[in-house]
Amino acid sequence: MTDRLPTRLETEPLLEVVAEMRFESTDASAVNLLPGILSERFSQYDEVKTLPNAQIPTSLASKQDALKYLPHIQLRHDNNVIAIGPHSITVAQLPPYAGWTKFSAHALEVFEELKGRKFVGSVERISLRYADIIDLGTAARTDWLNTRVEVAGVESHDVVQLKVENGTESVRIVTQIVSPAYAQDGRNGVVVDVDTINLAPTRQSFWDELRANFEQLHDLNKAHFFSLLKPSTLEQLKPHYDATDD
Image 1 (spheres, helix red, strand yellow):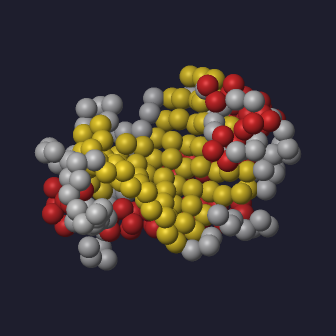
Image 2 (cartoon, one colour):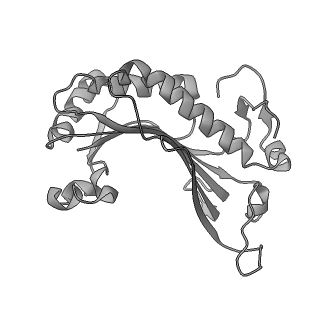
């Protein structure tokens, strides 16, 4: 990889992009009130769904992080989704991707609806996750990526599910690779899932720094994703280096 990153890929690998905010809350007010607040503010979200997670007893969910931050209510409009839980809110987009400028602007508008709400406590973390599937038209192979998976001296594996984490105390990068993988739209190949997480948002200046923090997460995510691609793989995805939004 060079220092110059593509602005877009003609062969779009995106499965979904998800921006998330996790926050402290003393009761269920967030999940009870936010759907109505957001539906009024963003009236284009005309589909509202209660998710199965809403049936999990609060006494159980509050004690397990794997359950605590799950969404209970989903708002949807076309390929855009807002998901709300007692301690979290996510803004997601499925293909076609509108680009970072448009997606981030909308996500920030949604998150800023939490500002000053009495039922939302301090923010615990924010994150930005991109899930992509690399489909090169042949059987999926992890050697499309800058990875090396060796088990018992064997590097070639028919099935791979890999998760690694690195970064600093405050910003983490979680990478997941799954091969082979199959998307609902018929694509199949290697899934590359990169989640960039800010674990220590500044309390006093959080809202003033929200945009800058998400821009940092986006830059880290993008650089990490392209560092995972071999030059030959990137070439097959038909990179563009123009000024088009990424």
